[in-house]
Image (cartoon, rainbow, N blue to C red):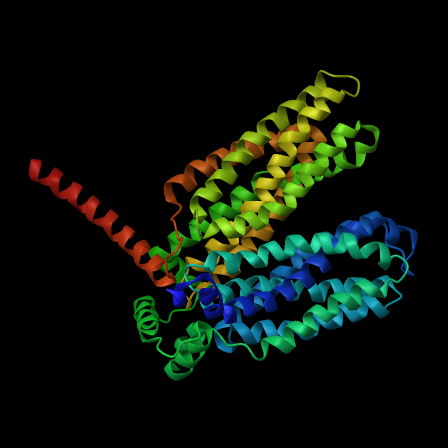
Length: 480
């Protein structure tokens, strides 16, 4: 009995947890590199760092980060199966460290743009490599937790920036040097940790795959799991081209499900709801103490929700959590749009009652989006594709996400200028409702299943549909 206790299980999974902690140091680094200009906008504008950036330049800097990261995604997709998941993550350490040193030592805004471009490319590469690496080294019982830590760590990078930035105002290099240590420590530790056994099996190196799997599971006999991996890879084949994503119906189904989640994310208007809630937070100084307490409570919940999602993903399941979050967004965005419509057309003066009423749906939407949808999407996309095609799949998904975000940003600007912000929230509510209905029908449950089992069920589902269709055709023909 003792061998199956919680401590024994933790000990057997220690290597897997160590890998997650190590690669998430890189997640902290890229999250800080992305968001620090938002929190330092006043200091950048005033020249506290020795150079000035205008508000428009900061906006373009943030926009360029998202677009340039697509380059890293494409590059990672091209080489992830050739050099390996672990080696690809290791390769990002040096450029990330260089980008932080440029920020620490540079006294010109050109250094900021160069450093941001480097960090953006590495961010795209890590968004492809880390979820794949974590999904492949994890046991089925903790795979959701391990992959989800990558998304959660990026959220907590925001907290770290808010804690460190006041000190960085007086010493502009402090934040950069602290962030660079994350990547250095990550690189040093990752060298001693095992590669994904799937990577070696892709190249037919069975002995190294067994050796690395033994280290990950902390046991010598891994024959049963290795046989399952081998049989799964024989079923999936060795095709790695993006074109094969569209030729294979099972992979195409997985791709369409992933793109549906991305599209629901982008069109939900949740990022706009979060930005609007930040404005409400800034106006809280003129409100009552009760209102400030409400905002504080919602803020605490916002940062605690990713932790709950981490622990629930392998217990409740990805499907119910994602459906609950998308449904919550659909319901929350409707009152957001109605309240803004009333404020724009029917209320001439500032209405405290409407401000109070809008706090709840704004924060509920933000919590559902940042605490659940972001994380579950990352877990799903990392586990529903087989190893031979996962790099190409994530390249497609991440690139589509960036393009959709850019196009919707332009559309949002047009709609807000000509009609009003309420239209964005109405679109978000409708899109989330449609997304909920489609996901309810097509989204598979992957909780506690091996990645081979997930692929087997997806293939069987497609075959069963074919049998049903053929059966109906034969029945109709027999009637004639």
